Amino acid sequence: MKILVIGSGGREHALAWRLAQGARVQKVFVAPGNAGTSHEDGVENIVLASISELVAFAQREQIYFTVVGPEAPLAAGIVDSFRAAGLKIFGPTQAAAQLESSKDFAKAFMRRHNIPTAAHQTFSDAISAHEYINTRGAPIVIKADGLAAGKGVVVAMNLDEAHQAVDMMFAGNKLRDALSGADQKESSKVVIEEFLEGEEASFIVMVDGKNILPLATSQDHKRLFDGDLGPNTGGMGAYSPAPIVTPKIHARIMREIIQPAVQGMEKEGRTYTGFLYAGVMIDPQGNVKTLEFNCRMGDPETQPILLRLKNDLMEILNHAVHGTLDKVEPQWDRRTALGVVLAAANYPGTPRTGDIISGAVIADSDKQPEDAHVFHAATAERDGNIVTNGGRVLCVTALGDSVKMAQRRAYQIADTIHFEGCQMRRDIGYRAIAVKK
Image (cartoon, rainbow, N blue to C red; front, side):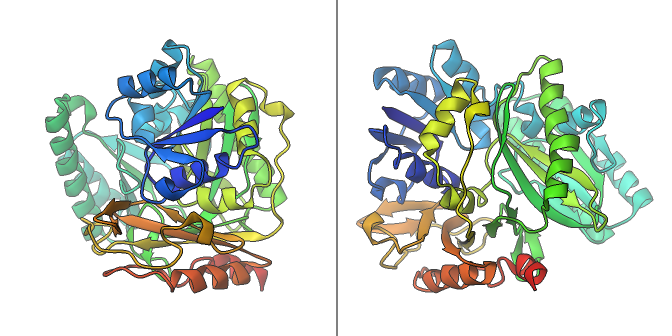
């Protein structure tokens, strides 16, 4: 059978790589994919510009089912379009995807369904937002209401940072709205939240409309520099499992966050299907609060999670699109998987593109090291070279008998890869290593 994966990042490379190993899978198409997916056995990139073209392709190629990786197509209604054409697809509808596409909707939804989260206010004008910040003080969290590719959150540690974030986000919203023709009064919003103390974990599940299947726990590093310093990014590395998510905390997250969210969507007529990601803050007492919902797998969390998965991913997703996830028992490698992101120069601002990437494992899938994989994200092929093509370029992911061993292996491989201006944290996994001591 043929599978279609929508997206071009490291998450989509990992999904395509794992799906292509399925016993019944003939080929995996990735739209549009990247330089890494183009070199994977059993995987083919296709460049299509619109949802209607993707629907037509899926019909023409008799795609068995489609998996949506990034948030933008979900927010644009790709699931609705595929289903209207009678095609199987795994992801939430446009209405359900508002859990991610609108921070304001998500916060109001959590309030309606008693899901624990940070106190917040939503603002449609900068003046009121600035006044609120002066009243509340810092640290404080500023969020763009709409999609921002993982970079729409500023954790402001002082008032100057908070005010700058508000001005930046309102300016960005106005530009986005002008380009899209949207009504700025309706769509230009900023959500301001209290700053929560604790440790953040990524909790990702699969939902088929009624059944919930938790995936392996994970934790990522969102700040650019070692020690969790510098600006927020889409993620500079991740590992699985996350020691902070004990069995007791796992049960609390399911009971207090995930189950109420899925049940709440059903009650509101937005039956949820797809991956559901809860960014969860865990305080020292083991209490949990929801930082955000994403309607997809995380990136770079997907890479270590799928490196640990022992089941046939195609079979799991087949159950997901047929509403039988209750029949799935995922099996996980007992080892830790850890991924290190190599980012382009100037990321997370305006990343430089076109830098040539070198390293023996970059272009050849058959040269991938044992118990590890180099997943591509923002890469492209030009004039026979693989080059940087965006912010987070690669995610070097490795397995190890401990967090420290997985960390050492990932950095051994990462240090053999070179491109000018490469940014790479050297401490991915440090929190888990501290827990294990």
